[in-house]
Image 1 (spheres, rainbow, N blue to C red):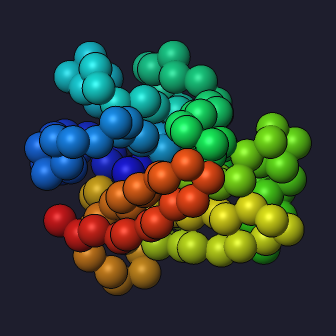
Image 2: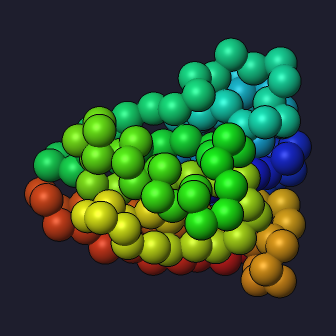
Length: 147
């Protein structure tokens, strides 16, 4: 999930709708008190002024490595190229990112890059939502969910 911008009820709803999840990842701009969500792993968004979240994280699950970042430092077509490079340099097959408030799913130079969109407002006119990633060994499935 990403870009909830203080809409804590939506973060809680994602958690409640997925009680069997091993991890909950948030790609930045929580804009709230992270202590409300001890089960969530966060990265810092450009609006998380009072948090001490890291700029990026690497998540290992089974045989899949995920690079997680907000991505506000990368623009336009250069975003995908730059994020793919960062993921590859860190041995990651997947990259989850936020910031754009749009659902995105790209594949570039061996890395799948996904933005779940916002839990507050999507600039592409789609419903707010998140991604469910199911991993089995080195294989994975992705499903987009809406709230």
